[in-house]
Image (cartoon, one colour):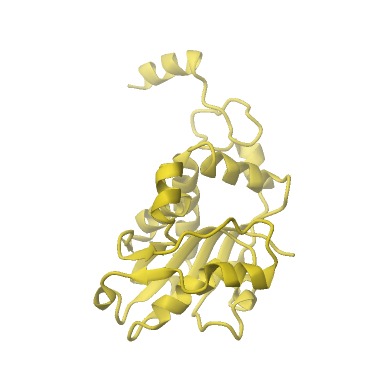
Length: 229
């Protein structure tokens, strides 16, 4: 099998999604050099971190974290663009597996019952072909050995892109857009809600507010990246 892989790689070399140099056998998704320079936040080690502060006074959560800092033009943006717009799902799964191992070193994250990715509207899902947040959630769920739930929470209303909106406009754009099909299946559960990038937290907050209405839910948040202002 390894001989076949080596032969294929002669014609279709595996490349780092950041620098586009060839990957060595033991490297996955990104080369070692690029991986060492990715800006990790270590927010999972600190309850009072910039992601958790996004939700202060807005919605009650247990923990909030992000794997990387997001900077325009940076390597994390490159990775997320490769995932989101070029369909390289293995990036999301790999980052989820990587972060899941780190989260399981912290007691609070061990107690979570299930992982739910922020859903895309069915039109956007059809257009893109997959949900990038779900790939990250899938990687997390695998490493953390938690239940992955992808069909209970859904986005009932399509919204315009959030990219160039201010904080209030972002909130106005996503308020009351999420629904739950079977809330009884989420009752009394500690849920880790997952997205690719958290900026103002408006989309995440809207989904958290919907889940908060379910009896006994405890909520936490994780993302691939955090874009600070």
